[in-house]
Amino acid sequence: MSHTLRTSIFLLRKSRKVPTVVGLPIPNLDGSYTLLGSPIDNRVKEESHDRHALSFHLNMDKQYPSIELFVPKLLSGSPEKSKMSLLYYAEDIAQDAEGYAAVSLDWRFDTIRTIGSTNVLESLQEMSAYNQLMELRIGLSPRPRPWNGVTLPQFQEMVNRKSHQSKEYDTETRDTLVKTMAISDEVSFFYCATDEAFEKWKGMIKYLRDLFTYCQHRENLWFFRDQCELAGLDRDSIIDVRYPKVNFKVHRSQVTHWQCDVELDNAAGNKVYSKPVAYKWKPFRAHIKSGNPDEVAFMIKLGIAEERNRSVGDFKELIGAGNRWFRGVF
Image (tube, rainbow, N blue to C red; front, side, top):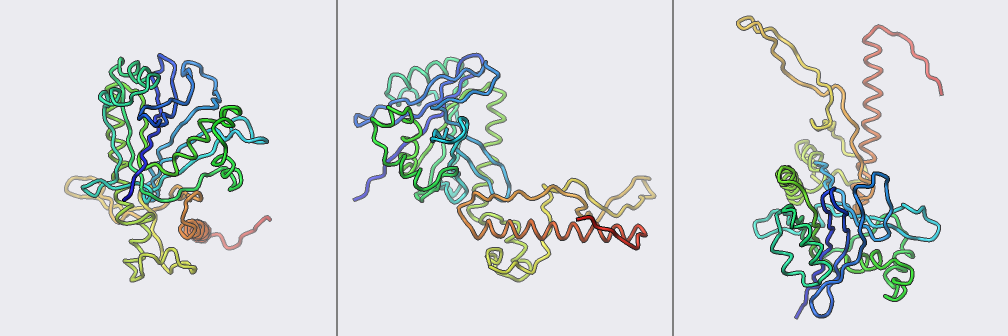
């Protein structure tokens, strides 16, 4: 017999016309919820630091999409505004019955009737009065996830801290978050937006879900794994100790300038561009917080190889321009 513990995090964000409530409802024994958090006024332009604030970031990277959850660190000796974070990659997201990543966005007016706790209910009812209440719901896979920004002893101290100690030091939100996220299989963020913004959010979340789904089926760094496969190597060659002997191409999303062959269409008099080759591109972002050290090592080696290729390309361009000597200053 098994029992799954379900815990939801609610990030409550109102429109800029009213203060924002950011909180974490924790399930009680009677099935109701207790909201941890405090009001934050978005009308104040200065950056504020709330000891109970939760926030999240959606990263739409095609090779390494992620969702990052932030909470104030609140450690002795740490800067006042320093935060700790928890990252969710494609392998951390559960799949629905159709095989898609369990990421969804919808209006959730019915949810306010199922929460139960008075203070949470009042916050959601006030938000729903604007007819803008939305829920971003994410299903999680059962696997350990390390927190970033804290050491293991600091993390253990948060886990072992008793409830009365958390209240005494005003770290209840942080400590409860650390404990509950270890057993959570679903996380929900509630916030408000206009009707127009909702359509944009819906498209963005669908795109994020598709990214997670593709990376679940083809693995992170799929663009480079595919090139290994095309070169007759194993897809996992990117995580070998030796850097794979593949002349990796640049993904078109990174390219800022293309070099093409140009021909003139005599019939119409228009220029025809063909054989595009990446000429300049943005650097590839290495996700050093990833829980997979082999993939991190590959991204670092990829960066070194790209820098070497860039330098070689610069030298060739100088030679092509007629330069016969070079001088380096170190």
